[in-house]
Image (cartoon, rainbow, N blue to C red; front, side, top):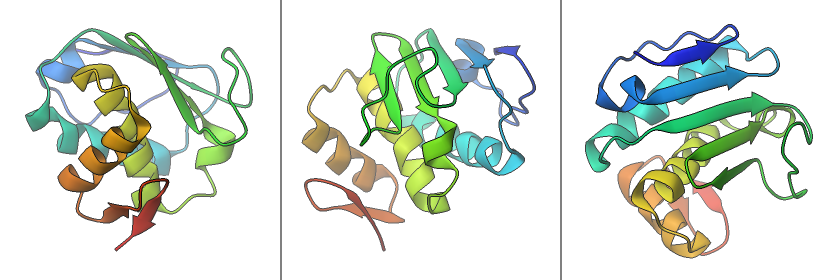
Amino acid sequence: MAKISGKFHLSIQNELTDKMAINCVTKVSSIIQKLFNRAIEVITPHVKPEKITIIFCRNNFPIFFDRNHVGVYFRNLIAFDLNKLENTHKDIIVAVFLEEFVHCLLHIVSEEEVGYAVAKIYPKVGFDGEKYLLK
């Protein structure tokens, strides 16, 4: 079972979530929580579960976010800036979650390769080599 710090509803329990720690530094809306759960459903068949820590925060706490990045990863740590996520289309939000999972769990460094991998496993978005596009 996932270790959760803060209020967060994880509706899925599987081998991936069993190795997950979720830290909510700030309030996470129910919509964002549902979309995160959707991303877990999509990514689970494609990865070997590993221990990962997810942080939901705002602005640059506790990690610096470039103005163009909504999520960042470092080894087995993924952080998401909720201020940037909340005004984004729901399918793009799922793609952003998947992007960081692909980096972290499939160990793909290249942003372009990750983008195409996300578009392949999540058919609601395409990838043009730089950004996700709604289909």
